[in-house]
Image (cartoon, rainbow, N blue to C red; front, side):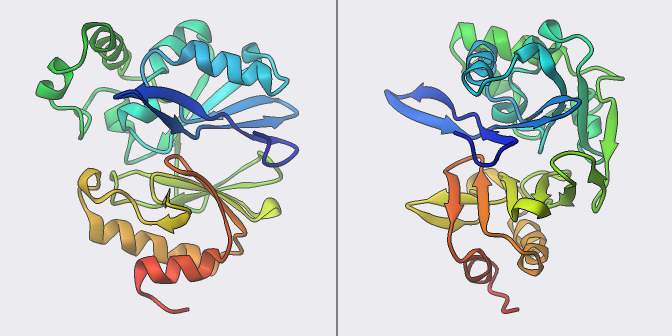
Length: 242
């Protein structure tokens, strides 16, 4: 689904227990090529390519991948993408780099979870984990940094869900790409999922900065697009009045 002239919601789908579960990765189209924001689960490369083509673009034109954080449903297709696009740039917040380069184990991927996966998915996950090696990250990002994409793409450090979680703000579109810092649940904007957020207090504090921004729309990785009173919803989530 096109959200703006240059930003597409890729809507990656997987069946879990017979129920479709949609992950809302984003694709940015700029003069120098395409930027992928997050990359779904292991095994989703084919679907990512299909969605890119459906949006009118060539998967060969993906120049960089920005990961909002380290969770397996965001970095899952990394190994396949690296094989498909060996020169692709990988951008993450500085606090996520040790995880994306294998210096530290992924926070939410204990060995028992890996072993409980079906054989095919486990093999793909193991391939992904094997791709997390030193030098994998080509650029580390810092809070407040602006990338020359979509007229200015601002990096916002929103930790709590993971140490280096980032959200991405497009001021020209008044659009926030929230990653897992926010969700849409039953049509309402909500905070991150508590069972999967190691430091919920920090996660909620990190949302307070968003109330200072002009945001009309929020794309959440889980739940999709929220349009409405974003500032009011954030105040309700954080308990802080502006």
